[in-house]
Image (tube, rainbow, N blue to C red):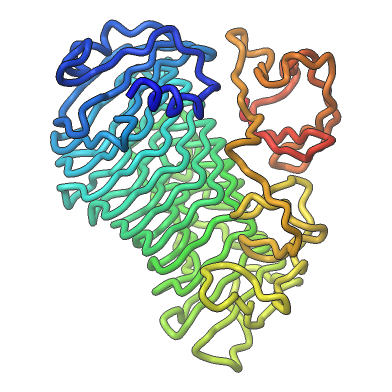
Length: 484
C-alpha cells in the first residue's frame, strides 16, 4: 500500500508535502472532521476508505501558494462520498487540492466551495482534479459543483454526469481567474457550465459536452444584486475564452446572456436540438448593466439538422450588431441545398459545406475536409482538443488535422506549474527556476504581444493590467495561461 501510495503521489510532484496523513477506519484519524481542522500548509490527507458519508463542512482551512493542503481519494481507486446536502462544503478556504473523489447522491449541491460571503476576501488557489460528479439526488436549482467567490482556481480532468434538471454541472457566481479543461459533461439539466454574478477572466478549453443541458455554456445569466462579486459589476460575465471544445446535443451549445468580451473560437458543435446559439439579456437595468455585446464567434464548425430553424435566437435589450462572426463553417445535414445561417452580422469568410468529419469519430476531420486550414489567424496561440498545435492558418473546429506522429502530453510536459508570489508582482515557475534566462512571448486576450524573459523562474508582472494572458516559451511553443 505504501509503495502504491508513493507512486500515486508522484504524479502530483508540483505539491510540496509537509506530512502525509491517513484518514479512515483504522488509520491515524477516523474521518476528515477530526483530521482536516488540524491541517498545516503542505499537508496531504489520503482517504483510505472507499465509501464515506457526505454532509461535511469546513471553514478557514488554508494552505499557501507553494504549499497547498491536499485531499486525495483512496489510492486503489477513488473514494466515493455519497449523500448529504453537500458532500463537503468548504467556506472561506484557500489553496486546496481536491483529487480522486466520486461525488454522488447529494440533495443540495454535490461539492460546494465559497468565500463565506466575505466578498472582500475571495477564496484563492483551489484545484479540483480527477474527480467524478454524478447522479445528484435533486431536481431544482442544484449543482454538481457550486463555486461562489473564487479567485484563481482550476477544474481539470473531471467528469460530470446526470445533473439536476434545474441546475448546472458547474455553477459559478462572482468567480474570477479560473480555468476549466479536459472535462466531460454528460446529461446535464439547465447548464453544463454557468458563469454569472460578475464572473470574469475565465477559460474553458478541451472539454466535451454530450447532451449538456438547455444551454451547455451559459455565458452569463441572472443573479440577485446582493450576490454580485464585485457588488458594482456592470455585467453578468466578461472576458471568457472558450476554445477547442466539442458539443453534441443540447438545446443550444452556448448562450451569451448579459455578457461582453467573450470569445468562442475553434469549437465543434454537432446537432443542437433547437438553436446554434442564443443572445439574451436577463438582468435588465440600463442605468447599471450594459447590454449583451461585443462577443466573438470565430473558426467554429456548426453541424445542424432540421431541428434548428433559427440559428441565432436573439432576445430583447441586447446589442447583436456588436457581435463578430468570422470564418465559421456551417452545414445542414437535413437540407443539402441550404444557403447558410441567418446571423445578426455578416461573416465575410463563412463556409457552407459538409465539414467531412471522420466516420466513427466525434470531431476529427477527414483529409479532404473543407475545414482544413481554412480558419482565421489569431494572435493568441492555442492548441486543439488533443493538445496539438494549430497550423498556420488553423483549421476550423476543435481538431487540427496533422499527419505527424508528434503529440503533446499536457500532463507530462506541463510547465504551467506556476503561482503568484504573495506580493502579486511576479509569477514563480518552479520548473524553470534553475535557468538564468528563458525567453517568452506574452500575449493577451485582446491580441497584444510582448517579448519577456524569465530570470531564474520569475516573471515580473507588476506593470501588467488585470486580464487574461498567455505565456509561450520560444523554443518549445509550450503555452501557459495566466491571469492577473
